[in-house]
Structures are given as C-alpha cells and as structure tokens.
Image 1 (cartoon, helix red, strand yellow):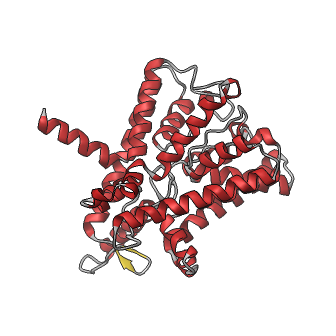
Image 2: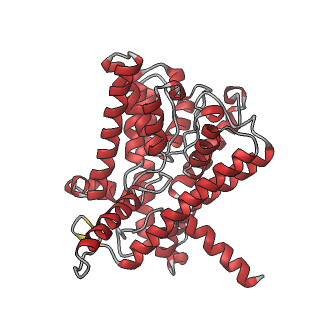
Length: 367
C-alpha cells in the first residue's frame, strides 16, 4: 500500500523489514527459544507456527530445537547481508533485503524492487537465499551437522527443486520464443521470478505482468505451491501438494483394485490417514477461501484477473499479483473494504487456516 517506499523514513522501512523477519520463523518459536518454561505443549506451538503437515523434532528438547532453528535463520541472514555488502549494496539496504528474503516477505527498500539495482550478481544472491528460505530448515540443520545426504535424499526437497527447475525452464523457453529475449537474459529473468513466486517472497526484477500469456498463467499457478514444510514460505506448501497428488493417484488405483491396501506414501514413509484427511481438508479450505476472496473482490469492482490474482497473492502471502495489483503497481488504489478483505486473507494465510479455525471455534464455545 506504500506507493513510494523510497520516500519513507529509513527507521520505518527498517521496522517493516524487522517485523517480517521476526514473523518469518515465528514469534512463537522465538518465545519457546527464550522462555523454556513454555516447554509444556511446546512442540504443538512449534508445529502451529512452522507451517506444514508434519514437523521434525531436531532435538529431544523443544527449546533447544527452537534455538537451533533461530541460529540457522540468523546465520543465513548474516551471510546474505555480507554478500550484498560485498556487491556494493549499502549496509541498511543489505539488512533490509536480507530480512525480506529470509522471511520470504519481499518488502524491498526500492519502488522497483530488486530491479532497481540492475545487477545480475545481486539477483543471483537473492535468488539463492530465496531458495534456501523456501526449503525445510530441518534439512539445513542436518546439512550444517555434516549430513548433506539428508538434503538431496528428501523427497519433498527433490519435488521442490523440480518445481523450481521446471518452472524456470518453461518460463525461459516462453520468453525466448514469444518475447524475443536472449537465452541468457531469459534464464536470468526466469530463475529469479520462479524462485520469487514459488517461495512466496514476491520480489521482482521485471514487470512479469506484460509477459506472454503462458508465462503469466504458469506464475499464477505457482502461487499455490509455496515452500517446503518447515520453511518460512507461505501458500499451500510442497508437502501438502505431494500428499494431495499421491492421494488422488491412490484413489484412482483403488477404483481398479478395491480390496488392495494402498497407503499414501511420501518417500519410504506411509502417511497416517488422519494426516491425509487433514491435508485434504486444508487444501479444500484454501481453494474455497481463494475463490470466495476473488468473488468478493469482483463484487467490489475489480476485474477478473486483478480480483483472483489479488486473492491468491494475499492468502499465499506473496505480495504482487497481476492487473491493478501487478509488480509495478500497489494495493493503494483499492477500495478500503477490499483492503480489509485482503488483510483478513493475509492473516489467515500467514497463521495457517487451522490455527484461525481453532480460535474461532474456541471463541464460539466461550461466547
């Protein structure tokens, strides 16, 4: 909604970046890390805040787990700050963009986002850390402990890497064939924008709203992927997409083999039925809220593309959409009622649907 962020006081810009950085890993996890007395029920709090259908407990004590997660988060943030400073970005802007990258929040200090720097090297550094922020932080823990095989042996991470790679390739080919970009330029634009949208960071190096239709449709669909479980990314999450896809395949097989025992598996692990049901319900609720948000925005006067892309961008915590909320536009011109609706979608998307639903049910029981 801030149409001219470069005109705002530096303190306000830094505060904005700091709040998203704290929210990236989660204020509840931070509380567990510094308040060990919250150890009772701590794993449930961590599971609610570090999004995803399944959580991995890295250490026997939840407080120690939270400290490890924050340590990794802080280390990666520091590395990005140093890399950006070495590439000529000012210290304050380096800190702001590192906060925004690792939180997958995407608030830049420039009106034109990362495009304002005009540096392929800066774009590649930001791309790398966006990809790392969208991966499961439990895998970073194992990697730093000298077990890199856990990273590449994880089926969710392989799927995540495949989505990023496939999206980049398809975008690059479309930009070369339909927009006339050179191969190197197309790859540079495609790899950054695919990482930005898939991880729900929302940075931009170009106005992708003027890209060919196929590229725009592909980016819109990628808004529903999100990062891995246990990452700072928003949207549905890769693990949930995998479970829903595997359940669909299993259900089709059961039509042909009604008496067969066919569990839903992610890698070698069979997923419990209650988790599959929970994930399927989450997916349906997510799509229902997205569709409802788009319809309500349409009633408020937004065109089809703007309404549904704004709904997807906000519930997935991505930021830019298409049309009047595209990467070179802002949400400032929208009606106040539309802004309130999108605020609600952002809160629900960030807190995860079940957290909000549990609060609503508790409120109804106590009312």
